[in-house]
Length: 106
Image 1 (tube, rainbow, N blue to C red):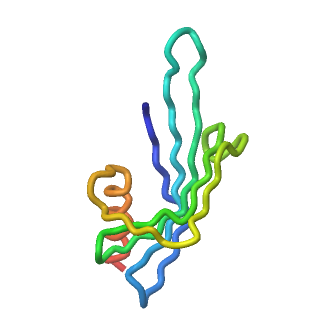
Image 2: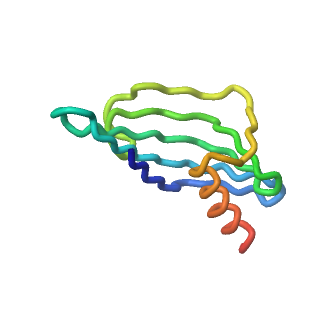
């Protein structure tokens, strides 16, 4: 499976260690057998704490096509922040590095 990540809108509060970002993930996988290739995407709203290296997924929507298009297959919004340590999830590690390095350079 191949996943491409795109960072979209983000908001920065200078008085807070938190950064909110919108992330698009395009997933491409080949189905076994003679069937067609299946593509789908996820649009997430993430809250990242740059100083403590943790994150919370505020919402995510799964779409039937790439680039956040097509039918909505699943949609979840968190009613409270559920913080997770940034450790093993390679995608969030890279997003944390990119976003927090950019913030620190301002």
